[in-house]
Image (tube, rainbow, N blue to C red; front, side):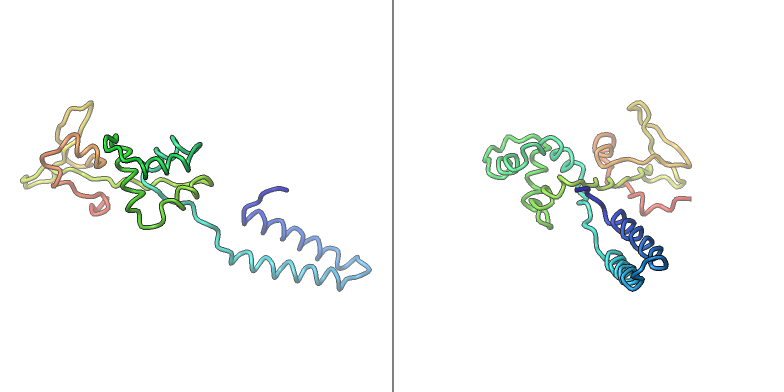
Length: 180
């Protein structure tokens, strides 16, 4: 048995539909072929309304943890949630917090990830130089911080924590910035 996605199934039924229409003019039983063609049309309409399950969208740290533990997922989830060890690494602390506080059934999400998933886009920020009357932004090249006018460099939250820990509150999310 071949596994098909929704579109492949629709295409196959359209092929059957076209074949039935083609046979209706040469067959000794044209009503049968017409019935098959009408039925295929109805099935195609129903299939086009079918809602395919969406891949879960998860934070990057969940994707990383999942890739590391997907071969023994049930045990890994159990161990992470039951283990009372508080000396977790940062990634295990994030993952444990996500499992305990995720709004949409984290266990189901992890199981659904076995069929594929997408990683959330990480928010990006620009870092304007505070208290300057004209638009100047920080930029980082080879771990050296400098200034730039014009096209602002974009930073992740981790990069803000690394390069601008004392002034990261001035960072502006990219979606709030008019890009032109």
